[in-house]
Image: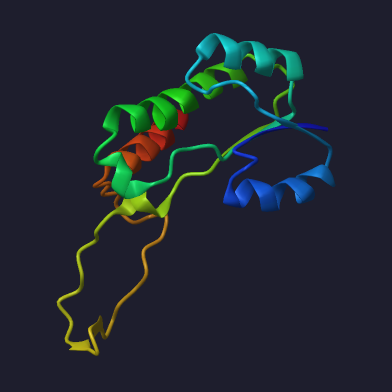
Length: 148
């Protein structure tokens, strides 16, 4: 099995790569995600069975000051990879790492609080309404919607 991995030098990528290597041959994406032609050519050359997409700019606070860069890398880069992947005949799976940041601030229950925590507090899950409130989160949520 051939696995194309983006973000292999990141926190998750470094730890996931050894596990992926047990499943098959792992190729690191070398192209700049924002370069559609290079990404398409590299994906076409590798012909992966699986793509695991972890690469992203992740500094949430910085995204408020570098909106264009975060949009280009995180959203446009992901769209480039998705479109390249759509042309691979043997592709079995495309794994995209999003972020809990897409849920943003959520309303807190009106329940009485004890030590600052609502008594009936329930953690959010995938069914919680997204509320992205940082350019980083908006780009990631856009990727989720594009994949849908």
